[in-house]
Length: 124
Image 1 (cartoon, rainbow, N blue to C red):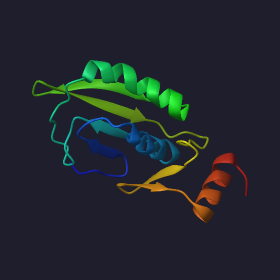
Image 2 (spheres, rainbow, N blue to C red; image 1 turned 90 degrees about the horizontal axis):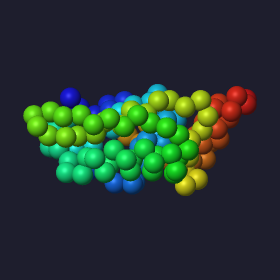
Image 3 (cartoon, rainbow, N blue to C red; image 1 turned 30 degrees about the vertical axis):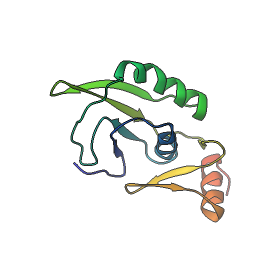
């Protein structure tokens, strides 16, 4: 299965993936799988137990939102699923607003950012 509007595959965890989580939260929501190749093949991760504790705390502390973080196993390999719901208010990562469009993460700037913030806050 390929990456899409609502699915992102990553081989290992990096804090920069908070931008993808922010983008999902500002769009339709989505899932990030850690321990997978870009085609969805599970390759596993070594530190799954530590990540199960760290990732929810990092998301809460940096983005101010909650996401479900689940440990999955396939073929004896552990991998992690991060489920991000769409949020009704704008979510930012260090003052940057990201948005998931297609299978890409876009940083909102200029008029796109203004329109996004106005629509999320109910202004016209």
